Length: 395
Ligand code: CTP
Ligand code: MG
Image (tube, rainbow, N blue to C red; front, side, top):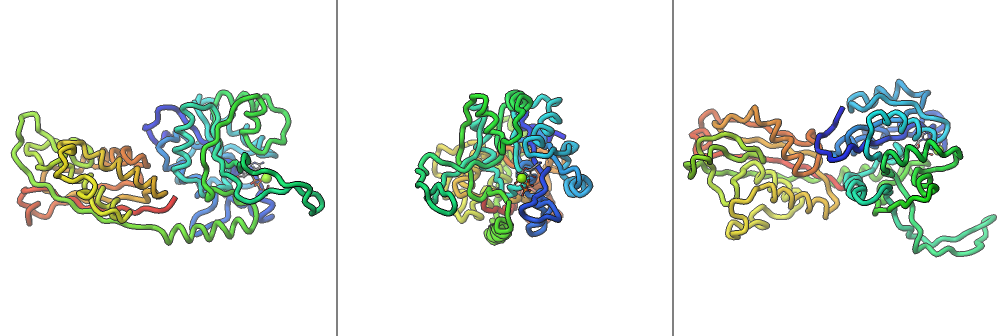
């Protein structure tokens, strides 16, 4: 299933869940353990599932836990999972072989043991693939480093050029597939090492310290604590806007803009910009969730540069502010209130348009419409009102 059509290249994602998790729990592989209401595996899938950049997701699963895995992932509509091998490297190769037939341009290879991958890191990786054939997220080491033997420091090691490398690791598909096929040594613990081994350059981008790998019990506890902190930082904003109907100035003004979509209408909406009452309410909801005032604070009607502009620019501003504040949309819900025009056949287009502008998955956006039973100013057809609510969470 193509999750989104908003992709220039075919970028696939392989998620590795073929391991045993023996260092954490000898009974059940760590990917099936739950953090709050979701398994580590589901959490690892979600961010890719919601990404507009990823075309398809291939899961590599442990052959002894096929039924468990399939039950957990059925709702995400992923490619048919394949089973893993004895080592991580063999599991990756099985995944690469499985997606080869789709001729992807790029592949992101991710450990299911990293449930807190975020959309910003995915975005940075995808951007960097425009110029590089291999991109990996990395975090700088902060502690001092010592080389030790038998618990005795032999020497100190300069940390300035040392990084911890995470997943997802992204590659030009043809190259990484070829190199994996040609690599007989089974000791590589990540895919960038294989790429480097063929003399190729690997670019690093800034990863996130929250994208840590769960290996031990301490990591699992850290993951549970992190989830609680994340949930306690969920924020909400509310938005409301009204625009008044007026007579169309020109015969070609036979539509109004609502949530970025042109909807046929004999009458126009008055406004300084394109009068998109839907986008304006959503912008106010997002600004509210960020405690950043309202749309007029950032785009004053007194400023002529915003005259007749496409309101999408206001939403793009919100997208940038969310990213600056390391936050992401959890969901947006909108109610358009008017007697005319009828909205129902445009709701899906609006949902897609809002998601596209904000670069989020369609299923994070919901559009509703209602009349007011001919009561009040909307009922008399004097204007359109719109309410929106936005929930955001830290990345
Ligand atoms: N992995 C895999 N196939 C293997 C081994 C590991 O797909 N044969 C996956 C794991 O499921 C994990 C990732 O590779 O998502 C990183 O491996 P690691 O953290 O070592 O996980 P496990 O091998 O499952 O854990 P352990 O080494 O403690 O047994
Ligand atoms: Mg392992």
